[in-house]
Image 1 (tube, one colour):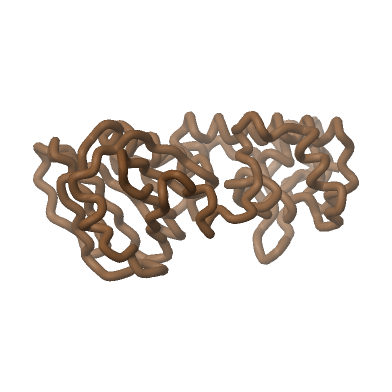
Image 2 (tube, rainbow, N blue to C red):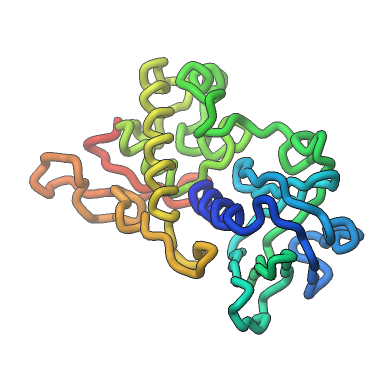
Length: 279
């Protein structure tokens, strides 16, 4: 599933053609994805002008002037392809939604597994939509800090790796980047969440920001399905320190190769860590 950096990368790509554009046509090529498309979406969005795009957690929001906001979740395999006006493009088998601007740019949503979701929400109160109910702070936002994380962890006895994946604690984090951030912070993924000190929480929030910002700059990580909006791959996977590195030497440990990255299962997901660096 695309995580925050991949979704941010897609949103920024869409922004290049949709910011300030007017929607000419909305083509729904099937009635639903994981959930049905919103009723009257074509009628509601055609003719509307885009005023802004933003990301909330793993959702992309397109805001219009006087119309409900368009909310997109990429699901497990969703991709967005931008097709310029001059390019001849024939819709593919799994192209389920195509937005075309008056300038001729096409925004194509392709989803082989159809786990994605599309919603419409009132512009004035989109934060109250059920998709965002109880969601925690953005890890790249000013509202996320070591003090905020420390407070959120006080009643959490679950492992810190599992807790950081809880969208009510912090929004948008996924398995890859939590593994990488915990490694950078030197925190063992099985540590009880409420055992972290204020200083450790401050370090961890900083490392989360660093990992996410580096991943965004690299266009995200392409392990299977993720593509940027021009169809090219992200390349942060070449910079992983521990994720998917089981049995390989930790890049930061001076152990002469005697200690290697380990993998355990937590909450049904693989966790990668260095048993020497992380404690």
